[in-house]
Image (cartoon, rainbow, N blue to C red):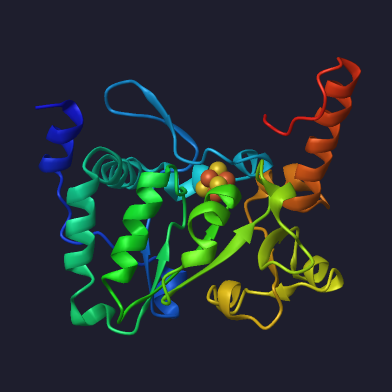
Length: 257
Ligand code: SF4
């Protein structure tokens, strides 16, 4: 039996979906993975957020309570299940969603982590199709994966919001496509004509305007690092720096980091 199988079996949770205090307040349930590059129990490393850009240095899910041992263990357990036993993950999640507690509720797919592969995203799309009485939403920086797999054939009970601060920001049409940006505070997002989603995270997919503003979490060292910028403006600056560097070396324009 592999190390990951042993861990998955040893620590099977009662439920896969959880609620943090913010989501409980609005009746939303949540599925979580670890954020960005993490060390797995076998010592290997895995990138859960392949398209993360500047967000990785400002990510709330890499600090504070997310680093508590029990929280990290639960997130790694979730990752082991959906990455290494995808059929079992799909079966367990579909089964759990049949419970009355989820009827007509919203599920946020990831408050941390991402759709790290096509296979994993396709698992979720099948789960959504099999759970017509439940509604799903997410933020994502997997722009090309969504445009290739989801956009033209999305489940009716699934809404999403692209999220700035990733390597694929340049693929988002910010004038027309729903997207979120993280601002230093509420005043800054209002000044930029974005909708404030502080009242309910569901505004990320239900607000009239497709421009969704998120005030940065009040984590002092991350606020200091972000300064007056947004995740979107920091990513544009990083992309431009890379463009200049590559044009100087005759390598042409590349956005990969
Ligand atoms: S994609 Fe989300 S979870 Fe991953 S590093 Fe960026 S902000 Fe954190």
